[in-house]
Amino acid sequence: MADIGSAARSEAALTFIVSAGLVYEVVAAACSSPQTTEINADKRAGTLMKWVHLGLVQSAIFVGITAVISSQPRAAIAGGGLAAAMMYGSYIYAKNCGLSSNAPGTEY
Image (cartoon, rainbow, N blue to C red):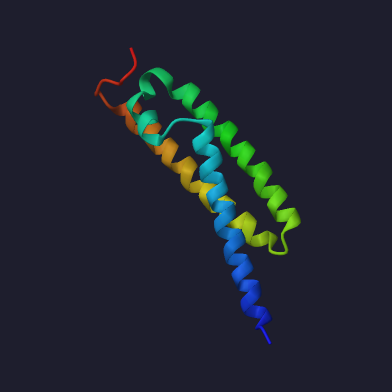
């Protein structure tokens, strides 16, 4: 007989990682990379961050749907929330580094 606790942990782990991966995929689809944000922050910080915010909103919708239909909603929210925080932090850090840099960007 299968261990029900082990099966639940496996589903929670799968739900967590799928939810986290979804955030990364949606944000990447909606905007450029943190590297591009840093390189071109002086010219495009506002536009780049707009797309980060839109990507995070889209991600939250998908994570919410996943939480509703999953038997492990906390795992979906934890995975998506952690990934969203990490990605948002990456873009904020990139923007701040780019704005404080004197290096030329790739856009004129």
